[in-house]
Structures are given as C-alpha cells and as structure tokens.
Image (cartoon, rainbow, N blue to C red):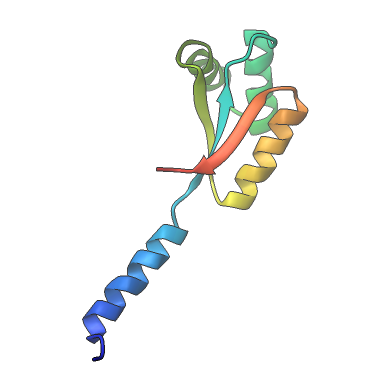
Length: 96
C-alpha cells in the first residue's frame, strides 16, 4: 500500500515547520545582580535602547524571567554563553 502524494507533502511540511521554529534566550531572576547592571548588560550586549532594556529587566525582576532574544539555535547558544559570561542566569530553548 503506497502513500498518496498529498499525504507525503503534508508530512514533509510538518517536519520542515518543526525545524523552522525559532529559539529563544531567557534571562532568569537571581538574588545577585543589581537591576541597573542587568539593564546595562542588555544595552551593551544587544544594543537595546534604555527603555527596552529597562522593560526587559523589569520582566526579569517581576515575572522571574524575560525573553531577551530570538533566532536560530546557534545564535541563542552564543547569546546565552555571553550573558552567562556577564554573570546572568541565562538559558535557551525552542520557542513554543
């Protein structure tokens, strides 16, 4: 019994869509870093304007985490390592 071409196409698209799901870098709240330092890191590493960096920092502070960047896995790995180098608690994962 063979699979109809339409069914094959659907399966191929699903696999491709799964590969295209962007990745995210998260920064988690910690008891060590000052809010001003976290804001400075976001401005320095990502080049975010002050207002955007402060908004992300407040999400980290009040919500416990913030998505600070999105993109391909390799870039999110790099961003995570850089943020950890600054002493922040950062992780990356597939966006859901």
